[in-house]
Image (cartoon, rainbow, N blue to C red; front, top):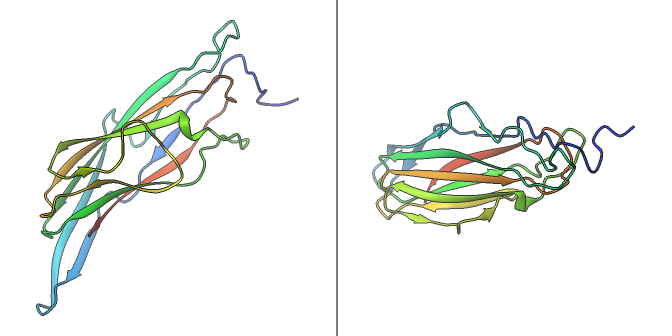
Length: 180
């Protein structure tokens, strides 16, 4: 008997998590002719809806009558960058492979889309609104030439595909800030 039939009565997507890494980063850089100059490049990650992860909750792909529906859920993370380097920096997000449930069913890339908004700062958003969340690294923000502090809001919207297999779908997103 198959544990997750192709057309489940109710799609339960519980505890789907995007877990952050790199809550802070201290960077030491060398300036030619001056020896080692310490500089701080700090990334703070805050989950807007509280908690310690991005969790979309319980969603379904079929209604109580077995008709296809596409539940949608939105979660947000705020990325705040502070620096004393006086140099531009790049903010990157990395998704670690495919998003799968415990039996290996893969969530299509188009099921999770994201947008990036600049709340403070004067840099450049590097991705268009509604970009699918795909495996690998993706630059999402490039600071101004002075490397000014910034606050970036990343909004992830998940729409469950009709007849998606039930399960707890998990993956990890890492955020990283690097001096340019």
